[in-house]
Amino acid sequence: MKAMKKGLVWLVLFTSTASAQVSGPLTLDTCYKRAQANHPLSRQAPLFEESTRMQESVLSSNYLPQVSIGGQVSWQSDVTALPISIPNVSIPSLDKDSYKVNLDVNQLIWDGGMISRQKELEEAGLLVNLQTVEIENHRLRETVNQVFFTILIYQEREKLLRLSMSELQSKLRKIRSGVANGTVLQSNADVLDAEIIHIEQSLTELVHSKASAIYKLGELTGTSFSNNIELEIPVTDSLPPMLTDLRPEYRLFELQQEKFGVQKSMTGIRMLPRISAFGTVGYGKPGLNMLSNQFDGFAMVGARFSWTIWNWSQRRKETRIIEIQQEVIETQKQNFEKNQRILLNSLKQDILKTENMIAADFRIVSLRDAVEKSAAALLDQGMITSTEYLTEKNQQTQAQLNLQLHKIQLQLARINYITASGMLK
Image 1 (cartoon, one colour):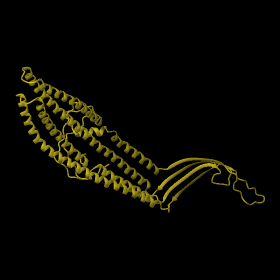
Image 2 (image 1 turned 90 degrees about the horizontal axis):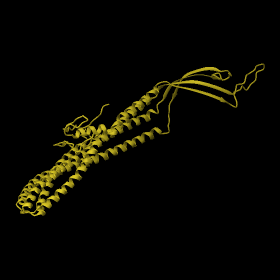
Image 3 (image 1 turned 135 degrees about the horizontal axis):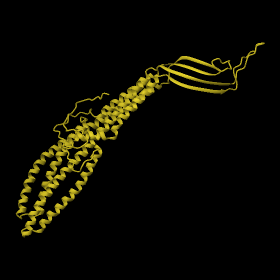
Image 4 (image 1 turned 180 degrees about the horizontal axis):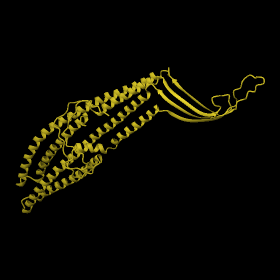
């Protein structure tokens, strides 16, 4: 079966692996492959194919002789009798009971191509079903994107919080030394201690949120991950052109139209003549001689011909119904195209916005680093309080966190754009 693809093929450089165990950083591409292999709906594809093959086999059996056995026992209130009498000639009367058992064989000779078209319809239906599976796989990739990058954001926040707590603990040791020497007030140490406890609370909340996201990724991929799993940030430096016809939904619209096309052609075939041969052998009373009261064998062979020359405009109505269904598919396609353009434009604006925010983040971080160093020196000299220092320290930490988060969000926005465009296969 050939998969038809339209448009450009966009190559995204990810490190891929097919192993079941995580060796080294886990890549987004690896998650895609594992999630697709683990997705229950992905296992529908071979079931659809097997069902279609079986149905085609059933249709092909219509070309084989159809054999049936029948029997009949009956009694009737009257029988055929001659309306005349002949002198000196005895005319026997027929029995009112009859018995018959027969073997019938029917062989289709020509059906106008109906069975062949029915097979085409089965194949068209199979392609539609397989494409729905591909659409589900595409949606699955979108879900994996969100979970994967959520974990990255949690990990980055955790890293910065732990770094900030380490710096505050180091600063607290110096303050406590000053308190012991009587040069620094105890309240300065208490302020730093309270902030460290607050960071520990944030870390506890963050660790549980990250564990929940890691569990979700494990369920999606069918893999058990530890809470310290290392993820590789996918990097895409450029974007493909804005194309709207590469999504799997477009192929589904085409396949649905093709299926309706096959159905439309079948409405005309139903009007063509049918030719078949038949044969019957049997035994009963009476046999073919209806004037005999004896059990006798009989046989008959022949051909049948049927042709529906008028069906009260049924064909025209069926054709119009199919045309309406095709028009509905076309409106769905146009609506999808409109929504796709809106989505891609929105994602592109998110990318541009995040790029501008990152440029500003670098300047802010540089300034906040300088202010924090100055505040730290003043705190060491006892010229400002710990509260004043923490204000600057928290501003610096937040600036660094914003920069790292925006970097991750930029890659997520780019990956979402590529995924939404349908170029990520």
